[in-house]
Image (cartoon, rainbow, N blue to C red):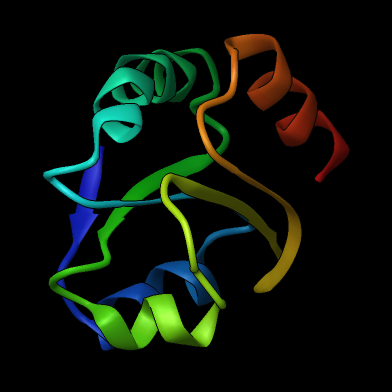
Length: 102
């Protein structure tokens, strides 16, 4: 899973891919660490979706742009627009449902 390190890189990924699953996280976040293997598993199961991670401490402008107030924040983008989102630890089934709805 690709870790985004700049706003420009993020914008390019969102623009160039039909469906993008974004995991806004921080290295110090316990729930983010618990969620990571679930998101990585989904990335393997859904190769049609681009999965990326955004460290809010390294790219605070992106966190601000999308109103990230708590982490993990997960957003699915479809054709460049935020289509589905959730905050906090979620079970795999909930994330699967989010992907299907987007």
